[in-house]
Image (cartoon, rainbow, N blue to C red):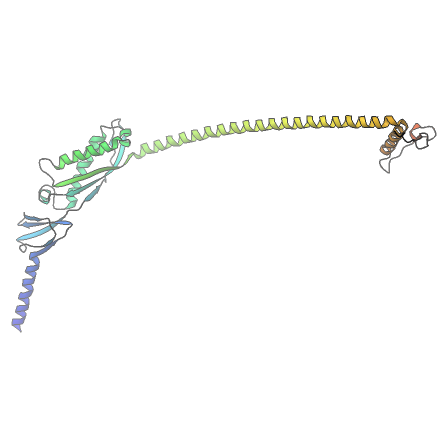
Length: 300
């Protein structure tokens, strides 16, 4: 029984030693083998690999993928016209030479990102100091990014190369500091209010002009209509008078009788009307007394 336990324990020990000598490198990583603190080997291809068990050899992994570094510093930068602006940016970079990276930067991606952030920030500050706000917001923005990229590459490829490649540098935002931004917004708001008030005044003046013109046209139309109505009325009255004159001229006695009837009708328009006259001597009732003989008009 003791012999079986010994064999089993030995087998477990051998398996533990074997597992410590085997390691897998992922396709997204570099495998760096250290021997007593010194870089022994850098494995760039994915797969199963062998090394000596600890403490003779150890392995660490470094990301080989394209990494993104975003700006985290909101410290304002002065432009050529001494305007304080805040710039947001990002950098796309990768570790290309693990040996140089570990020797000159560190063993983690965070170490490289920290140092790269400092270099990019200084490069942006230097380039922004040479340009105006208008240039940063115009077509020269691309030129600024290219110049920053060149400056960063010259730093990371200097006397002690970092073993990294800077693929791209991009500006995501250029803005004034909060105090200036608030002032700019207030000026913009005041300008918009001025334009709005000017438009309202112009619209009110145009409205008054349109209303005055409409009133004038209404008065002219009403006057013309009244003139035409009076003209037509006068023509009608003239025509009626002519017809009356023509008809009454043919039979004067009938005309007198007809006018007397109109006078009676006007005098006694209501049942309560009272008229005090002497029928025997008044000419008003002459037609009723038969003083006017109504004769027919002669036939022609």
